[in-house]
Length: 187
View 1 (cartoon, rainbow, N blue to C red):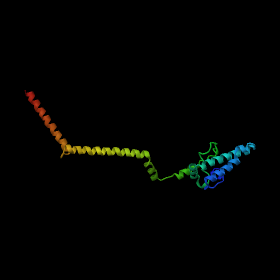
View 2 (view 1 turned 30 degrees about the vertical axis):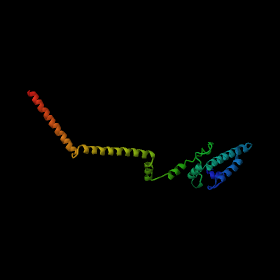
View 3 (view 1 turned 90 degrees about the vertical axis):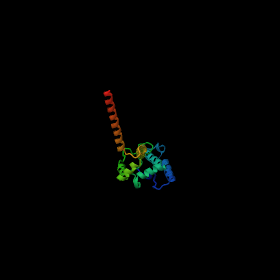
View 4 (view 1 turned 120 degrees about the vertical axis):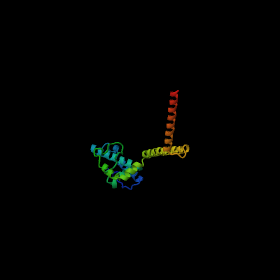
């Protein structure tokens, strides 16, 4: 049986005390030491049942594992029960039911909006977004401060006017140099 509740003979609303009592009774009844003198088939069956009971108790007595088990096993069918739990006895490994993957795919199926929202709210994305925002904000502040400095030092002039005045000064300087060269060559 794959359903831990059925293994212990309980319903899904069982309390922790009921689970503990059911386990205690079945563990005493099925313990391998009690069946050490029994025939081989009876001993193997009792050992297998004891392992199942132990695994069921381990899962159902722990609140987290029980919630996970209840989530993965819809309406008590037991098809998706107890993967990854137990004492490592290898219980039911040969008959492992892979159909739980298809069921999980249906459960976790979501819309594109939900997927995008999940991605946009990840810690890494938000950290990168805040870093990019800080860089852009810094660039904006530097640009605004440069414009303010320009206006302070060049009041009343636009950038084009300043470039034209620089060209005029360069032209005047080049004319003065050419006049000096002419005067020097004449001497």
